[in-house]
Image 1: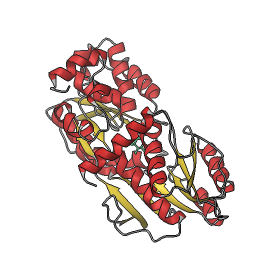
Image 2: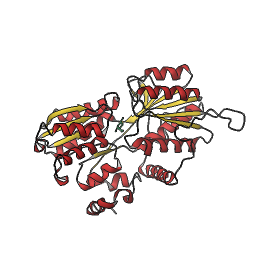
Image 3: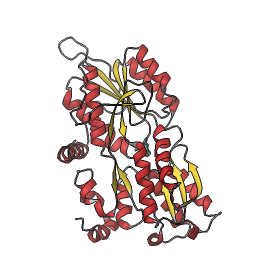
Image 4: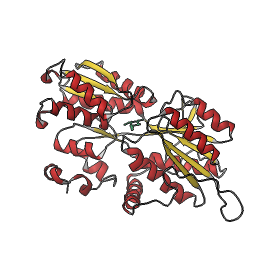
Length: 366
Ligand code: GAL
């Protein structure tokens, strides 16, 4: 997908969010396959997302997906569930979606490796499954960003910011999330060959910022703050916890070591401009959510799924699953304007609030 159409897509979401609602069916609405007016049942598409501590899911994935399905298939109904990081809850949500008549299930699993049973239940009920963002080997389709590259990009930026020397803490994602293993492998492929030493490594069970803060606070009782010359945080939520722990431990906000992130969360973009976080990974979620909507609508209507999506991505084989893989983008202070702002992911007004106005001005963002 080209930049301009991304911009339009993202701007559309801002408008929809601003209007306070969406045309497609809302949160956990129990929608059953209804009568579309001509006596035929309307297709039902289920969207199951894993958690809400990471802002992307409720702020971007869900509204973008719903808006695109609404655009492509006015008669389609959407049922939506968020599992709040609870695997058993997600499995029940899938059963409910099936009982509501879902013929297509877009599933971002809490536990990728453990989701095979859910796919089996869907298949037994005649439904097809799109693994969304996290791989499920048994799924019919899969779409995600190139996750190993995400980890590589994070680590390369960290090593560069540290001048290839010094010691770091490493905070990875949830072991149940298959992406977390890929981010970690990508990061290690760079760190292990670099001059940077890993003091301690932590696999955060649910990606939570609170756990990240606790881990780093504990580390500060083991190491002097000036022994921590950098922090690999696999996502922005954790980066926020790291910053809170370090500043809480007495490190001045303007003396923080380089800290990585991922997801281009608004708070992270602000920290980057303020010099409190060195980088994040921007995943243009419109392309992922819209490709998922396109494939879901084709399947729901019994149409053929095109080899190249309307979003411009050609199918590939990823671990035996027909897949669409998208490219992540590194964001630093230098390219905030050319990436998240140019794409309409955030406006300068979203970012440059209160205490960040000055940092925006210094970076030439207005
Ligand atoms: C991953 C996802 C990331 C991020 C992470 C939690 O599965 O790919 O974008 O949301 O979960 O931050």
